[in-house]
Figure 1 (tube, helix red, strand yellow):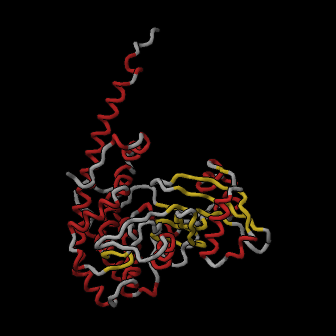
Figure 2: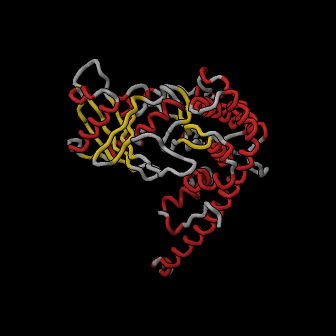
Figure 3: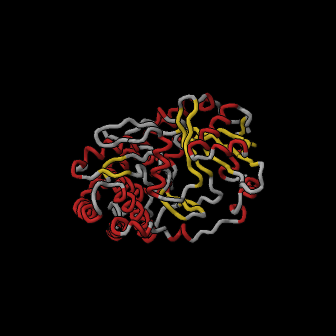
Length: 379
């Protein structure tokens, strides 16, 4: 059986519609293959030959974002130590699932694959230079309503809208405990007497994890308000190839962010309440993402940028020096492309099968509907 097989009968109508979307459906389906793709990667790849690095864990185009702090591959829910090639292959599959020019049957155009290679080599060779940014996102300036938190909340868009639409009582003791735990993780516990929770909300995430939003209002003029996102973390078990050395999953995500995109997150931290672990960040008022399929030129650009970021983070977290890692990457890159091509083919086949079965499910639902038995209206 295809390792990425999924049954529409187990999914909600809304999720089925997302997978059926003509522009974004395949990539959304791919995003939900994370655990299965890790297992399949181990089956296909020469993992024993790969040095371990602190992986991003889930580098895909929906996690590439631009704020006032620049453009970067972020969102470190799945960051763990593991074979460095997993980040490489998963990102190449992501780009392939969002390419506009997919009629040739290739994983990606050779120029795109070469751009990733050059970007990765740059990141490994010169980690002190930081990372490159995709031009299409880098040049986007914040709109007027994205320039400060007051305007952002008044506009009612993005997380500002979710805060208003999913409001809960901000006086709950649980929320104050979360705030204090978060501030303690940052060494800012003294701010617990400065900030009050003006409003709060609970918002389901795109992959099911709950987000608790807290609007923090200071009682001093020299401290800015914060809109923070308290997010439930993933707690994936270690195995022979992927592992988490940190005692708290929120700390794992903060450390991954400081490695892969230092300074990008605003006031990151972590919290614990009633035995549940959370990752916490201040929500940026500007957050631009890639919304459409990518042309070949855009693929070349984003692959160079993301590869420079991954190469930099991998080499800084490896027990190898840069020269040794360069040699390892060069020796394995063609193999990682082959692995990515196989993963892409299997994901594509599973998605097509899913679409066929979802159409059958819709037909069956219409037949069972009492409205389908109603006589035609009389005119």
